Image (cartoon, rainbow over all chains, first blue to last red; front, side, top):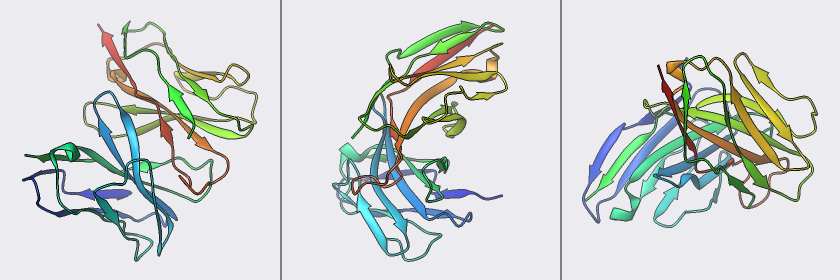
Length: 113
Length: 119
């Protein structure tokens, strides 16, 4: 069972570079989301999607873009990387029901120098 | 957005003993969902237990149980017979019963409690 697949696991970028973090799920989940995890901050919501073609901003969206062209995929784009975006990024998905738990990918550790 | 507070940054327990991790939350809603997630050093986020606010009975999953006090807005996690594999970061999370325009079905997380298990 693949579940939620995130790539890459690790990435180092230089300030100003752009990149895309990939996320795919094979559970036919309507809801997908991106979080970032920083020491002492817990997980904070970046962007989310409640279905193909629908995306919205979370708590910390600045510097990130998303799109949802299919149910399965929800990539996160860093437009111009900054050191403040050094973090661990998690993609998570669930059914569109409030009692449905989030299923997480294994995370991407991103370092921006 | 609802606030989730975990007041214990670190906790320690001896193997085979019981430990309780605290979580409080702030909400004006009457219906919502609460979760505990475990994050071991592998970084993976693992669901431990969940509780629906409309259910008075406390959820239990093997050695893990919760003490849900709705009036006090408290949702503590009890780990019985602690094992070395329980060492991890534990996150408490809140989800609204209604998808609002700001977060959809997002979880609001506390900042986590790091649990150390000693032999």
